[in-house]
Length: 475
View (spheres, rainbow, N blue to C red):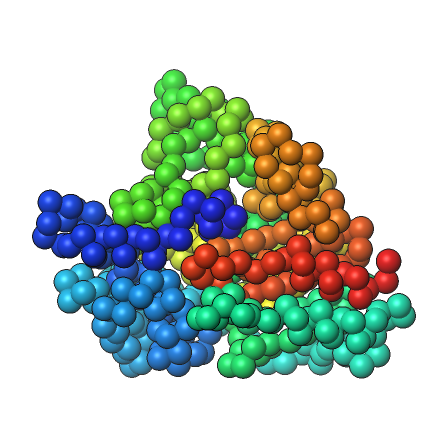
């Protein structure tokens, strides 16, 4: 849910306005029939995560997140069950969907399973400690914003960060909730909107794809996967199946050639996968080949869930094994102890969309890449993998995509200007749908994290705000 998605549509707003306005029982009823499960499903998933993962009040999540996706989500009714830790949502009085929370695991939307089966699936999985750690960030939780590195213009940095929270839209559609600036390996600025703070887990949407890429990188480092070999995907093992030639590199570069309808329209692949599928990785892997692998770039959330399922199977093929592997290989050594990666009903992390973490932990992801794959003295991924994810995907004519990371590519077809002319050419980032950004600036030894809930036609101007922040750091 990154740049490609926001350009394609205003997704649920358009879906519900058209679908429900046309009418459930008109000749266009199937359109609305598809829209209602999307409305109920995304509302239940976000409400469950907002309450049980982020620790917010349901009313706040409804008002500030869900209703802002579309005014017609106000037709939905919400039932919060704190005893069983679930949220059920009924759309327009017709379709009900339920999302179930499990400690340390997050929320899962019910499709074919039930709450009791999901709770059995999570039995024995330890809940990570949230106790504060006294060491300085990134090893611990202590942050010193008084004694800044030499050359940092404190006043200019403070103004730039404050300005990044400005929002003159009538309905507060930009809605920045957290900004963190890292320079020289430490946090030099940090600010949160009212109602949020350093301990608030925030949803990354498609920034989650970059975390899945990192987990793939750990398997490459361990010799269990190879960039230029086909990954083990069961659906592609039939005799003569042309998909068997798709390499891991091509999947990471979004150049697999598989069909996948990304825009979030009723009945599209993305909505069917996220809100109607028991096994999201299998759904995406079942798609046919439309183009020869490696020849066409096409942004696909399905690809991220195929890759997540590859990691899931390599980790042991159970939710407990996947959770343990992610903690051991990435989250614990990086210090990302707040991370909650929500799975589908099979136990596979929804790699396209559903990682929650504090802003400080998203910043740790950025620092990991800024320092060439090393954090807290531990190498997580090879430097060659870092170079790979930030290099342009060969099939992308705009050069704005790498390998599950976005780049400062070209402004448009045939253009010679960078998309973000005031930012360094080497800028690359994990990015998500509501303008979530974990931006890495190697030439400036900096990481900037911006998390929020940008909706409608608004956008967070990272070219302007990130440039102002960088101007306050030593050159």
